[in-house]
Structures are given as structure tokens and as C-alpha cells.
Image 1 (cartoon, rainbow, N blue to C red):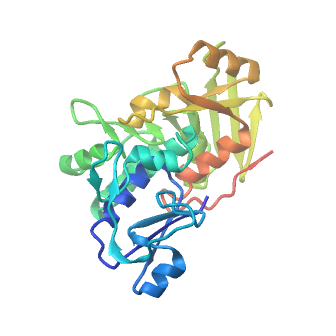
Image 2 (cartoon, rainbow, N blue to C red; image 1 turned 60 degrees about the vertical axis):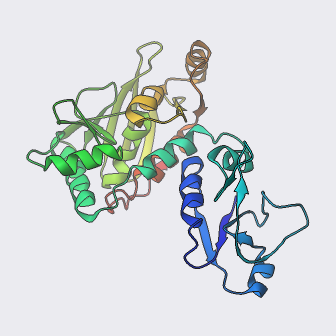
Length: 304
């Protein structure tokens, strides 16, 4: 699916549209500045901003375009005039509720800090976990709170770092050995899989099937990943209602020894939205989420 937003220079309605799109999809959104009536007609801008999905304006009349250089107003579900379609309208235009993997991707993408000092602190925290299995000491409380507020990390009630995705400061069922020395814990199955591409290092993941307690081992050596047992799968689920992903996602992202075990868990938890994914898709999602987080994830991870 190709998303493009046509707009006038400095259009005040552009920001709310882009912000709402970020809430419903992690697909890349191209923007194009339109500066003439001819270009408005050529590209199909029925006022600024105009969203095109695969070249089609989902909020325009089929086959018609009142194209031109003007601001565009929309009506929400209650008929009120608004500067951009609502989140619900955009989600419907994109084909309904996004799949859990897309929800998780959007969640984590929005959690990245933009401020240079905050980004540096975030990376320092991740590198400390990677080197020692623990969070660093003596970071400024204000910076930590800012990272907590965007869900890049989670703090305890005492202001200590409890989570720095993909790492957990306390033991979880997903233990990860980094290289030959450091042992750390990941928040979930996808986070555990993301540590190798994030760091560009070998890892050994030791987890368990939550339905039967049987061990699951995932080894990445020189970019090649192997799974034991060979039929192991991952379930991903995400509550699109909001909140930190540590609370709304992580308990749902687990390894299972085989499809029957995964299906049994899904059947026992009908209230958890999600899907079972294969090893290749789980690895690809992990690379997408964490591969460039430190700018050092140069290792191409392949399934053995």
C-alpha cells in the first residue's frame, strides 16, 4: 500500500493528518508540496491536505476531483467540520484494524526520542544493558522521565529503570545470552529476537512455552538463526487501545513449541487480539523494530 499526502506549503492541516496516520499505520507516508493549479489537477489534490492511497483519494467522490490550491476541510463521524479525517475514518480507509505486527511497529516507532540529548541517553541505556545486563546509574531524572513519557523506557515508582525495550531490568521468561559472557532479559519474544540485529552480535535465547513449560532455544550465529524445536512459532498480540507496550503488548508476545500449542493458547484467550506467525516473520518483525535502533545493526539475520 502506497500512502502520499498532497499539501500546500505551510498548510496548518498537514500536521493533524500526519499525526493521526501515525496512530493507525507504520507504513511510510510520502508528502508532496503542490504549488500550482496545474499540479493540483495533475496529482489529484482536492484541497490541502489530500491523502492518496495507491493514488486514490478515499475521501473524495469517485471519478471526480475539485482540484485546486485551497485548504481542505473534512467532516467527522458526527458531521462536525475538522481539519483532517479522524483516526477511525483513517483506519477504515486503510482497510480496518491493522494487524498486530503493524500496531506493535507503530507503537515502538512512536516511542523513539527525537531530542538529541534524550536519544543519546536512550542509546547509553541500551548499550549498558548489552554490556552488563543492567541499566546504567546516575542519569538525569528529567531525561529519564522524558524517555518514560514517550514509552522508550519504563520507570518504577522510585524512578529506577525497569524496562528499556528490548531489555527488562528484572528476570522474565526470555533470557538472552549476548556473545559469550553477558546475560540479559528481554520483555517478550520479539524483543528477544531483536537483540542480535540491534547489536550485530551472536545471541542465545532461552525461553519457555507458556502452555506446557517446555524449553525453546533460538540461536543466532554470524547472522544465521536456528530454532529448537524446529516447529516453534510466535504469537503476537497488541491492544490497539493505547498505553505503554510493556503493559498492553509484552505479555502476549510469546514463543510456542508448535502450532497445536499456540492454537491452544489462542483458544484459551479469545479476548486477546493477535495472530500466530512463523519464524521468518517473527525475525523480520524483530529486525524492523530493532535493527537500526543503535545504528549498528549490520548483521543480516537469516533462518537456518
